[in-house]
Length: 104
Image (tube, rainbow, N blue to C red; front, side, top):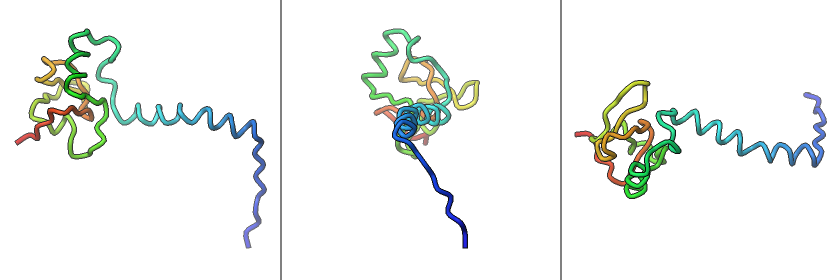
C-alpha cells in the first residue's frame, strides 16, 4: 500500500499561485502563435482593416486558419506570411479573419 504524503498549502501560497496562473496561460498561448509581427507597431490602416475583417491572432477553429486560406502567402520565418486582403500585411499562419476562403 502506498503511503500518502500530506500536502500543506497555505492560503497565501494558494493566492500566489492563482495570481500567477494568467502568466502561464499567456505563455502557453504565445507558444501557439509565433510572433510574426508586433500588433502595436502596425499602422492605423492595418489596424482598421483587421478590425473590419474580424481578424483574430489565433483561430479557434482548427480547419479555418490563414495557412489554409487562399489569400495567404507563406514567408520566412516559418508559420508567418502575408495576406492579400490586408494589403500584404503580416499574419501568422495560425490567425484567421471573417473573410477566410479555403484554398482550392
